[in-house]
Length: 113
Image 1: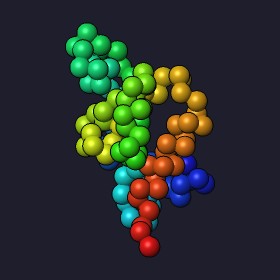
Image 2: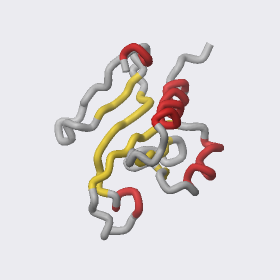
Image 3: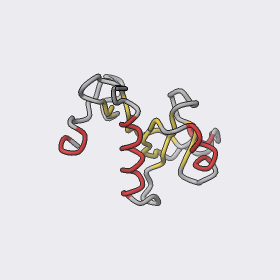
């Protein structure tokens, strides 16, 4: 992480010590949140109690309709659903695709010139 993004994730939540926040080191703005949640938090189906790992990312709003039609994408859990998306990390998506989305999310935190 440090070589690519200039920083390491931090773990700011005492109640959820494994939740990792990715911040731009220049301005401390979030560009990712890695967490494990019950699947029902994403699907709305209370029967889905399986724990899953998700990465919340800030992506271009115009991408949401197409992404939300895919299996591994959900309106962001516990974030502004207009700007953030939850990506299910279940090994179905290629690492390159997830990293490209992480890059795009980080770009939203760059200072405007």
